[in-house]
Amino acid sequence: MSVREPVADFLAAGGLPNEDDPQGAIERAQELLERVEAEAPVTDEEAQRLATGFGLDDCFGLAWTLLHVIETAPSPLPADYLADSGNWWIKQLHLRAANQRD
Image 1: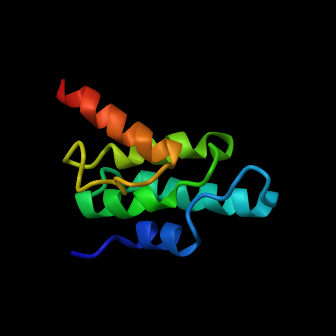
Image 2: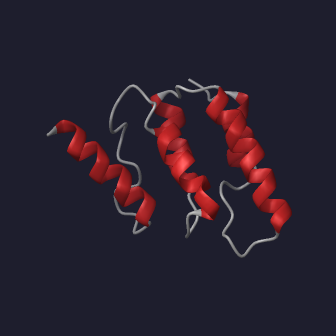
């Protein structure tokens, strides 16, 4: 199964920039993420791919939006969300999915 165009466009642009990146890059990421959000819920495959789109910080709150979009997938934890990742956002996805199961 393939991902929808808004998801592919967001990922092709590199996901979320960091807060110290140029304002234009942040605005473009926001625009692309809003397109993804408008198509929610996402599929499990889209959620898995979107999990690669986190940056190192919260990008002025955009990372929370991405996290919430990922959580619209039908499975609370589709695949592993990069189980070996040290990214704080990936850890949050794991924690929130575990809490949902309890």
